[in-house]
Image (cartoon, rainbow, N blue to C red; front, side, top):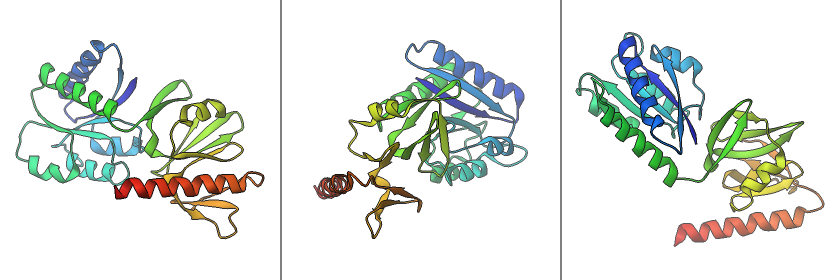
Length: 247
């Protein structure tokens, strides 16, 4: 599995050392690989940032421009799933960082054993939490949590993955590949030719029951020929979901 990791530090030597230690951690892990991107400050990261782009972010707290705390606040406004690890030479800001739900807190100078422990725990966290799929975007592969997918839609020779955070990914894959990957997850429903929706994000069917209204206000048409069957499947899923919540 490939993970995208950001290292944000305005001290070049510190950032380079941390990158080296992270790469070393993944070199001894046969099941995962890590691609590290370095940023010289929080502003540079925010310009490049998109929800879901990085699974782990090592963020220096004390930087000359925008602070790591402020950069993390802006990230959390659109991405609540990235693991943020704060790095600093002082622990005086640890309580200020807590409301941002950091995954961990690392004091400089960096120690390989400490970084390796964090990377190992992060990988275990990803493995035991929500199910995920791996998708191809251009020449890269990305791990996508199923709960972050709002809908899947065929687009010519590509497939558009519409995310709950408002962004989308254009995958160089066939639609039937997504059908196969999602077929065993009860959240996902084929509602029309080339369209799969996540029923957790359906507000309701439209008044004329010709489409599903999603949480982002988009509409997805329901296949006319199978409308009764599709609406029944949606109703049954909602009933089972309510029952599971009330247990």
